[in-house]
Length: 245
Image (cartoon, rainbow, N blue to C red):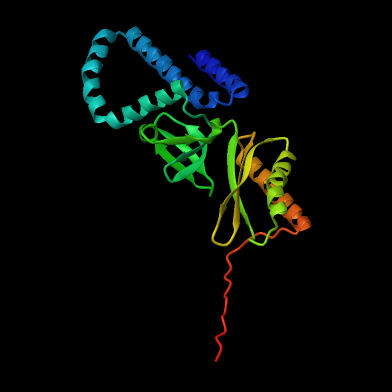
């Protein structure tokens, strides 16, 4: 038995080194294997000391029904854990959003899944409740679509308005991890001429997206300052009409 358990631990360590996703399932597999090996060992020992193992197993089968009814919720979590292991809707390290909660998966156990939130606390979900929720898995994201808007003042000359989409395209194209989609003069706002632009970040990491978007914003500010284009902000203009006495 000791040799078998030692082999299981070596198998676990090799799998964890080779595959990040194996972290999700390997713990459950090793636990179940150890449970089976331990149960067989106990049965063999009992048989060797003269205990009727067949009658014992039959008795356990009858009692097992009552135990299963009493532990229905726990068994539901165990089967949910098995579903996570086989279907792999997420693995350790994936960033999930579940309702109003979000964070990175730290551990998938037999009963619960633990998630580390952005603010640092650990969130614990029962596996059955987790699978019954709508999960947004950002760990499976291949690229990120970004839509952003900016507004310029109404006194911007027409020729400069026409050049703004090209400025935005060039600012985005400076980054190799982006793919430009479109940029348009979209609407006349209450206090600004609105432009809508779309591009893709060819990496799933949130920090990569923020670094790139920050660089694009700074580049656009630099170009607009050089061209004399002013960003719009809420203002009011009052027209006072004098009446003749």
